[in-house]
Length: 92
View 1 (tube, rainbow, N blue to C red):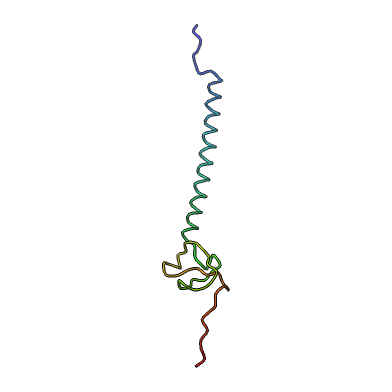
View 2 (view 1 turned 90 degrees about the vertical axis):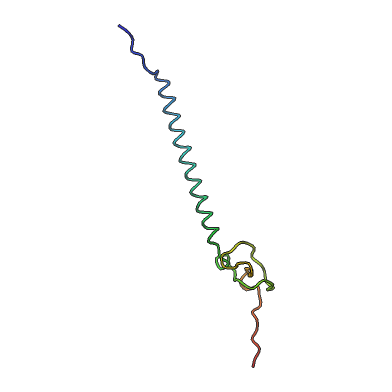
């Protein structure tokens, strides 16, 4: 009789361990990329108000909050709330 030829048990165990490691690595990669996507979305939706400021015209004397905000555009800056003087209306 001939002996049955098959894969040795050690080869099967090594392949199973390699598959488990591969699954864990893929799971970690997917988790990290989803967190990165959430962070990018948060950055794209940043507004001056959410940062604790108020959009004011460029040149306003105030404590500036630096960043890129959707509601400031190119002609406004984000001033920290309470750090600027509102223009006083002169009595008529």
